[in-house]
Length: 267
Image (cartoon, rainbow, N blue to C red; front, side):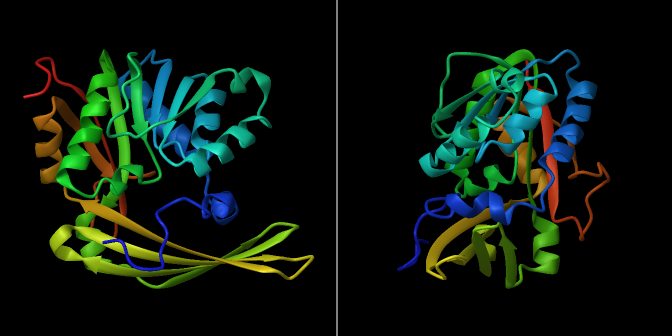
């Protein structure tokens, strides 16, 4: 689905990702996940994050006492994460290690109490094979009593509300950033193509940089995820609304899936 003139995800965009995400609350999200971990896998200490982005969740999990291993396929995003972690307290910084790797193929030869993937990173696995590969990575890295959790777009709500064109503005002392989101839904692929047009203006010089990126994101339905997880030896325990834990509805854009590895492994 790559269109002419649009770069792959999280290249130049990575430099302004945190600016545009300044309204998000990774600390609150990690506290929500921490509560679910406490319920499903008490005593968990070692956590693998697939698609760690610029490291905001990794830092928050480290502050909560987890030893965190982050995997990110975008070198640009990982560079931002490495720079950001240098500003974190030494005690939490020492709990984090980062790897430039792909969630579909990464094999760290180490088991974890928890495997998570947040900020809809799993949605970038558009084909069934890519998703299955990512789920196999989760299964491969789970300890026998471990749990997994990831958030994603909820198909019924996406089709009910439909993605809309949006404009978002954010700024720092040096930069003013405007992002225009132009989505195109592909219902036969259960996916949304998002064309990002980003204007970055230097306030001092008034020089503008224009960034074009195409992000293709899949939305999911509970029965298909149950089947796909089961096919690689994962059992779903929960599929609820993100940040509220309520039952999903047609107004629930984001849900989370959580579960464990099955005793028999992949089928």
